[in-house]
Picture 1: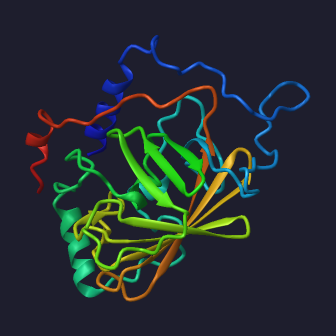
Picture 2: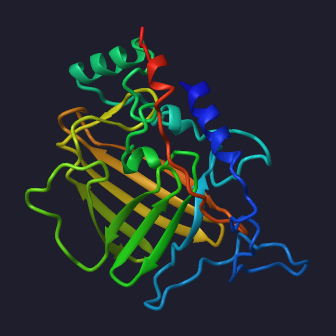
Picture 3: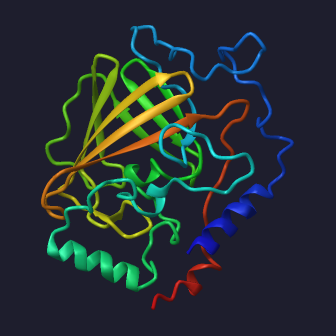
Amino acid sequence: MRIIHWSTIGLALLSPLSAQWVNYPTSGVPRTADGKPNLGAPAPRAADGKPDFSGLWEPSTAGGNSAPVAGAAELAPEFTNIAARLKEPLPYRPATLELVKARQADNGKGNPDGLCLPLGMIRMHSHPFPRKILQVPGLIAILYEKNVDYRQIFTDGRPLPADPNPSFNGYSSGKWEGDTLVVETIGFRDDLWIDGSGNPLTESARVTERFRRPNFGNLEIEVTVDDPKAYTKAWTVKLNHHIKLDTDLMEYFCENERDIAHLVGK
């Protein structure tokens, strides 16, 4: 699976870059006396005084908010296993544990990432492709480079839908608690993988995210999954992102006409 995944990324990077805004300076970057970006500077504020999450971000690969080594093809550990940095294993229900074992024994044949399907908002938090956050009054939009996808988080006070049509990203409504944006999401499909290990998310899930921007260069996302169909109790994982400067999203779309025949399972 990793060979297929990274070979696909490699093909995407072979596209001509001359027409892309990959070297255009990012505006509004605080700088130190020697002119370098001051990533530890205070987070910017929106017109309403709340932290502004706008920017181009990618997952940090190590513990804390650290960027990858230049040129290294590293992944955040949660990309493979959402519980990689948790002290205890996920609280599986017996049927869930059997499902995860079956997916792994089948060599990830049904992995939505390998099938070029949308991955859902939890898995996209650890996916290596960058994402751009746009924050405007009443709405935060997340534009994903992978598969030209998007997510909407409404901050206009609307309630969650009473009977949502199941979707990959669910339906998200957020409110501010001080400088923390608390987002509640429901309405998921029943067949989602939240990592490469096959850990599931079902239609019964309610996901709570707490977004914080402690400084200019870093974004913290605390994710709590309450999915009584799959797990015996709620569990929480913290994911970190760092800002990407002087570059922008590139159009990338996964197609699997040649690869899917090789996903033969066990």
